[in-house]
Length: 25
Image (cartoon, rainbow, N blue to C red):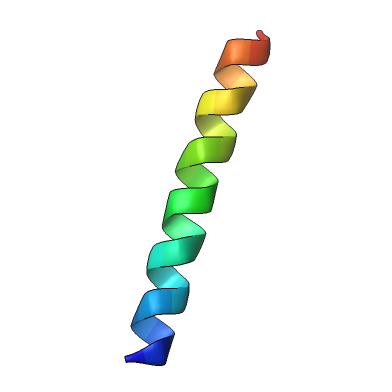
C-alpha cells in the first residue's frame, strides 16, 4: 500500500510540474 501511495504522489507531482512548466511558457 505504501508503494501505491508513493506512486500516486509522484504522479500528482509530475502532473503539477507539467502544468507549472506550461504556465511558465
